Length: 105
Length: 251
Image (cartoon, rainbow over all chains, first blue to last red; front, side, top):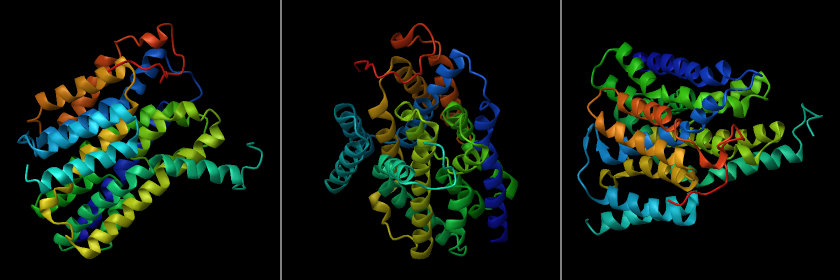
């Protein structure tokens, strides 16, 4: 338990330094070059795409068997493109997933 | 407007609430995921306060799960810490993308808002930056995006650590993770480079699926950013006109 406390604390300090890194290293008054600005604007889509692929299509490093996860995600993506709304996407994905689980898909 | 820096005026409160509203749809997901992570603390046999403590300090769910996994399987503390830091290395990318967004903020604001940075709040902050050109109003908005979201995350883990595994395994609540990120990402996907960055990143994550410690996620994100940045955004071929152009690309 002491070990867990120490591990969480050290990981927290390290993670805070990671969170500060870009804000302070790139955050001066100077204007960033256009290429850098373009790359930075792609951070969110690239990182979130990576997390989606890893948590949806893989399961602990192996392919996830095709089923409710994939189908509900397709519903969510469809609604996201149609409604362009975070709330609609979450609701539709959650309802579709619950329905698929209940249906035993 | 920035004349009374020590007072929290009605404008700042409104901007804070606007930020909280912008991320509110993600809060139920954060609470449910927090319940699950808190339950892991409970199952590990650690005191319940460890749940909210980890969520208030590390404040990054995937790495908290990795630490609990590693320690309960008897891994050395150093391995648990390094695994968590590798998983959280993606936050350096968010931090870089937030640098221009935070550039005009006072240092103490940068310190606080960086502390509250999560995948979700960073993404919402970056994607909405053009709507908040005034740096004072923008920082209150971002505080509203990131503060309450971290708050419900801490409360969710606290509840999970006290209650234990109340959510049945058959519910497979792990689905909340890809669903939350689909909900943040896909509605905002409008430019060709952003679509390409997402696609490349997904492909690389899957190709490198056998890498340990979630390194495939980091590699995928970096490959997506690096390769897609060569694709010209037809909306602003001439230079850096603010990014995030509203011109929609038909998907």
